[in-house]
Length: 372
Image (tube, rainbow, N blue to C red):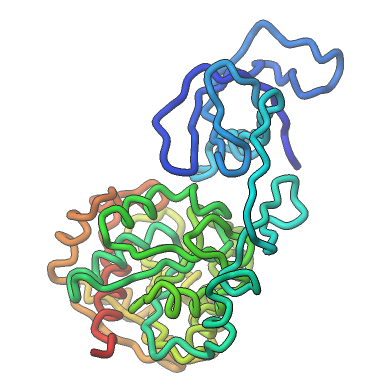
């Protein structure tokens, strides 16, 4: 459940669009939660707190903030911030504008947004009549960290391709949490972002991954879509209890809309957990058991014993899908030249090359499937 704290902003830290990052002083003994006497302790500690400015306003030095410290107290990697829930003494003005889609529904911070396909949207008519995505390649990846590498692979094969990220709600719900989406857009590698399900804050909002793919194609003019969850993911170490199961459903969605599903394998040569070493069980389950429609499963042509292991692990996916071995030649340099530093589970390119080369190979293959 929520762990509440009351704090005071001491410093504004380097931030990015949609996010204000602050250093906040909070009582060291956990007081200031509204319990007991309500008196503050003289002892305090400082933590990093993240505010979504569209939701709660823009904190300034000296502001009192109400915080949710649950993820911070758990020591989660991507969730290692306290989250600003409100500026109780300086509430933001009511926002005006259309929109009837409610996301993060029935939570204290539910947000009303304009859906690309709702009746008040200028895109409603186009999406009301759209029934397919015209054979568009759709790369599906488990982790958000694969996104920049997929784009590197697309650029290596077909520079200038219009690529749109369709963001699932298995990780972070606010698109603003992703610093890489903004950097990739600014560099021209990414055309836009469509947030689906409970995720929000993209260039376009969609109800489902299906309507998100249609919006990417028919509104943003995508030539390739990359479907992945936002930063962070949920896993329990059980065969079915992980958010990446949605990758299999995304393959089905791309196929039913007449797209070309391309499955990016989650691969690691450095993960300490055996279930993720080589081809992750996430990919083997999502593509091997959840995805009922056939896809191109991209097997990166990695050298040596590790490459043989990956091919052996992926072999049984060929019973339902088409295995496509793709060269990784030149892709490491493409990944290095990205405007963002790639990282997955705290490991960079030097620590886990296979993870990023696999995603880049999927992007390279998708680029070869574009018509015209």
